[in-house]
View (cartoon, rainbow, N blue to C red):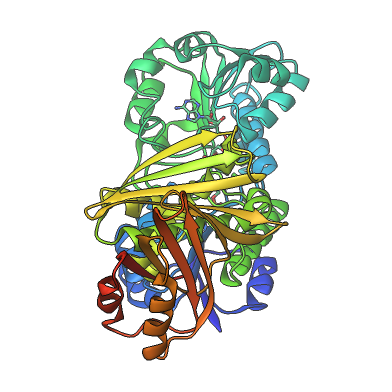
Length: 526
Ligand SMILES: NC(=O)C1=CN([C@@H]2O[C@H](COP(=O)(O)OP(=O)(O)OC[C@H]3O[C@@H](n4cnc5c(N)ncnc54)[C@H](O)[C@@H]3O)[C@@H](O)[C@H]2O)C=CC1
Ligand SMILES: O=C(O)C(=O)COP(=O)(O)O
C-alpha cells in the first residue's frame, strides 16, 4: 500500500480520501532535518504553507510521486527540482478563492475603521470614540494588483461597496478587466491614484519587493495597502519606515517575508498597521474544499490516473488527456521505436503532427514522444513531468511541425530522430478509435500494428531474401508472429517489419546483416 505524509494541518475530509488508497501519517511541525530523514518512505506529500519543500527534501524523497499543496501558492515548493525528479506538483486553484478575497475585504474595512484596536480598547474597559474615527471606502479608489481569481472576487465585492476600481495585471486583456469592472492601468498610475491598494499576485522573482521604498514614496499619504497574497511582495522594512514617516496611512498584512513573523517594527506601529497570522485561507469552508481537492488528486495519481491541477505539466489537463489518450500511446510507442532505430545519442527529434493532430491542443503529444524516446535510457524514471527537462539536459533539440494537409488518416504522427548514427523516421496512426498502426518506417510505407518484440531490416527487394531470413530466425528458434515488406519500387530498397514472439537472442543481428541483400537490421522492444 502507498504511504502519504501530511506535514501541515489539513481537514479530516482530505485524510479520509487519502486513507482509501494509502497509509496516511500526519506529522506536523517537523524540522527540515526530520522531514529529510523520513521522506524517503513516502509516495506522496501533502502540505500547506507551513512546510518548505526544498531541493534537499525532494532529493531525499526517492519514492515521491506527487506533492499536493492544499491551497494556491506553491512558492514554498521547489517546483523545478520536483519537475526534474518527475514528481507531479498539484494545488487547489479555486478552493480558497472566496476565503482569501473576503479576508482582504475584511482587512481593508478593519483597517479603515480601526475595528481590532477599538475592540481591544472596549474590552479593556475604555470608551474612546475619538481615537477610532475612521475613513469610508465608498467612492474611494481601490487599486487591485493581480486580477486573477481572488483579485476578481475582491473587485466584485468592492464594486458593490461603491468603490472605483483600478487594476494592474499585465497578463489579462482590457476586455476581461472591463468585465470585472476595473480600469486596466499601469502599476505606476495605480500606485499614485489609489486610496487602497490590495495585492493578489503570486510570489515570483518578478514580484519580489514589487512594493518597495520607491513605490511607497509615490503613494498618497492617505493610502492604505493590503497584502493577503505573499510575504516578500512588499519590502517590510521599507513599509514600516513609510508608515512611521507618514508616507502612507496604513497597512494590513496577512503574510510576511518570514513566517511565523519574528522580531518586526511592524508590530509596534499601532492602529495603522493590522497583522493577521496568514489566515486568508483559514475558513472552515475553504479548508474542506482544498483538502478534498488535493487529496482526490493525490489519490488519483497514486492509482495511476492524471491529476486535474498539476502545476508542472503544462497543457496536460485530464480533459485533454482523456481526448488525446490513444494518441498519447501512439506518440510514446513511436518515440520508443524511433529511439531504438536511431540507436546511439539522439541530437534532434522532429515531431510532425499531421491531419487533425495539427492543432495546438496536440502539444502534449510532443511530451509523450519524448517520454517514449527517453524510455530506453531512463526507464520508469521518465514521465510526462520531466520528459522535457530530461531531453533538454541531454542536449536533444525538439522541433515541432504541423501539417493539416496530410489526410491519409484522420490524424497521424511522424517522428524523425537524428543522432550520432544517422537519421530514422517512423509514422503511425490510429485505426478505428484506438488501434495503433505503424504506417511508415524510414520513408517506406507499411501497415503493421506494433508488438512487444520487433525486428526491422533495411534490404534490397529481391527473390529469396524473406525465405533466408525466415530460416535464419528459425535456426535460432525465433518464432515470427507476422511479417510485412514495405517498398517504394519493385526490386529497389525495402523495409521488413517482423513481429516476433520473444526477444532476439544475442548475436543474431550480426548474422542477419550477413544475409546477402540485407544492409541493416534493428531489434526493438516496445
Ligand atoms: N493569504 C492566503 O492565505 C492566501 C494567499 N493566496 C495568494 O494569492 C495569490 C493569488 O491567488 P489567485 O488569485 O488564486 O491566483 P490567480 O493565478 O488566479 O491570479 C493571479 C494573478 O496575478 C497575475 N500576475 C502574475 N504575475 C504578475 C505580476 N508580476 N504583476 C501583476 N500581476 C501578475 C496573473 O496574471 C493572475 O491574473 C496566490 O498566488 C497566493 O500566493 C492565495 C490563497 C490564500
Ligand atoms: O493557498 C494559499 O496560497 C495560501 O496562502 C493559504 O495558505 P495555508 O494553506 O493557509 O497555509
